[in-house]
Image (cartoon, rainbow, N blue to C red):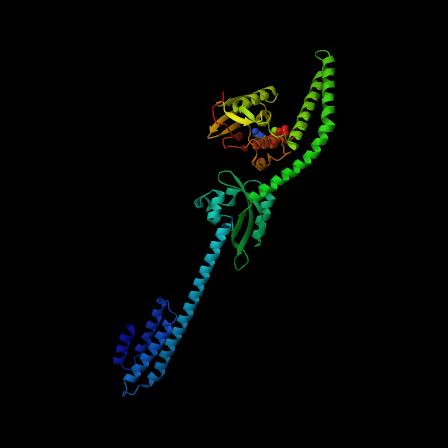
Length: 446
Ligand SMILES: Nc1ncnc2c1ncn2[C@@H]1O[C@H](COP(=O)(O)OP(=O)(O)OP(=O)(O)O)[C@@H](O)[C@H]1O
Ligand SMILES: [Mg+2]
């Protein structure tokens, strides 16, 4: 249509006026057309129309300028067409590259936990998997740095080495433990790739991670089992070699103490020796129980009574005498090994009393819930430092000068033998809360 208008105008004006140049507009209209052939067809048609215009004038001898202008105009048509074809090819290529990149990104998002940060470590982008594992929303994460999910496990030099590596433009690879919004911990295998500018300086980092929490838990279980096997050998030897002589020493000391006159200053020293011998005996019993656990002797019991027995044990212990311990909750029937469960609760109560330095409040509550019961043991102590929280169940892990580090490991295993779980948490308002979840028996307990 536009080409015909140009043709008519061109026909009416003398050949000196190069209206034919306007055909370029017709060729350029191809910018809005997808077809690669359009510019070529338009250039061809324009060439024919320009030649037709010259031919239509027939008799009129063309002015000399027409011999230069006409070929120039035609040359312009074909140059424009060639440029358009090239442009369209580049456009098609970039579109396919963008599609490819989007496909790659989709694949990456499906396979990994991805985040990008600026050079200062502030999060600029996160994918769905990142939000899911960290339990933070995208809005909560963007603009923050990774300290938001720092679990406090890795020492400063570790983080410094990470930042120095990526700051130099090198790739960092390692395993990091992070903390989700709800306080749960997760491990990620992490690769951080710096994006470099033309001068080789990083301008952003992309962190690609995969969840290895399960593997880490498996490794820990294995470590504990290995420790257990070592303890087994040791315990058998210790029990044999130490337990009996220890009982002999204690008995002899008790006889000697009985012979001392009242008010003898040595009696206090002897008393201290007996206490130490008792502690050593407890540790050996713990070792034996831990290394060769007896299968639980299950019978129908009242959970509340077991807790009251543990409470009585605490009151009899010097560290527990000054603790204000209350047990709340109705009687509840469970299938359990009385001695084993009592010892597990007693361990938790003693831990709490020790953490509170013998003074404070210990609140024990039973919460029945559809075939199960949750017992919470809440103290008003200082809580557990974040950096050791994931180690407290490790056999032999202790922060106490006279601790064996087996209390929680044994308690956890005893509870698990009853089909339950034992977790320890430190609420923001302070103190420590141990939660024991156990299956219960239907029906009321008299
Ligand atoms: N209620 C609590 N408050 C603060 N820290 C605690 C509490 N319970 C346990 N811990 C920490 O966990 C560590 C491990 O406890 P665990 O009972 O296994 O061993 P222990 O008490 O040190 O020794 P053991 O029980 O064998 O005498 C303790 O050393 C302590 O640091
Ligand atoms: Mg303990």
